[in-house]
Length: 389
Image (cartoon, rainbow, N blue to C red; front, side, top):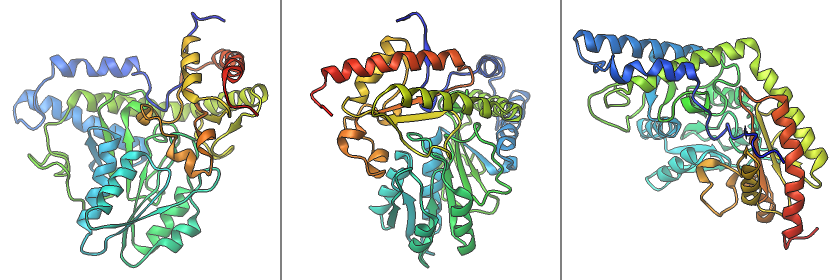
């Protein structure tokens, strides 16, 4: 085994900062340090940078710059969308809807609202992780004010039927939010044609810095802010703007737009399919989780029965391969993934999950190395395991 080779396949957890992004950020830590709300030249130079970054992020999804709210990350953007909309519309109605496989930033926001005077309906998903539009339609009520369904799942890669789900809400005049943290920068998106009112993004999922996200809020939608203070970000997110990270997000968004225009996501999808075939053909009893067809172009996820996913991740790491078992955000927990349980998998099977997510620099040789390395690891662990077929 060639342990000097390293292959990072945990891009759903985070991506490396692109060197062009890092280079663009540096001057805003030292040379251009003014507060963008100051009237002098130091402030004006950073205000220009903030405006440019906002335009770059907006352009990635076809939005207007004033529809982009910078936040401290995807989780904060989800919370602003969900709590902000629910609270702003509480006199109109207090019924909210989400799905069973959302990121905890969404699920926990809804749970908090459920403890504070709102009623929450959590829709089930099928074996591939899809929300049924007919079930959504049946769950809507006269007092429903907000629906939040993620665009693509971080653990199983399934892309939800957002166009259909959003249209159902649009027809009823109900706000629709989608967590697009995994999709933005990796799938072509245009909010002018998508029936979404709010959309969440995060820079570190598209080769930008950690610690900054954005919420698209369609013009005319009223939200109650979570953070009060100086009224920055159009009054929705007070606090002096993090100019270096915003600049980094802007450049990362522009580079993502260029990759999409070149068809980079199609190249990744070919490598993804190569990886999926290699794992399924060479690891006995393994099976794909999520949709075989409607999945993120860089995302491969499996369950490998009779072994623990954490053991696989550690052995792969020893072989120079970065992978994950379930979501990186909850990897410290010993509980099985709520997403896999929602698909109907048993606790025992869900513990054997493995997620391999490719990046812009992943090569066919990297994929082949993983296909070569994983099967003997699985065999060794199964030989040691008390679980037998």
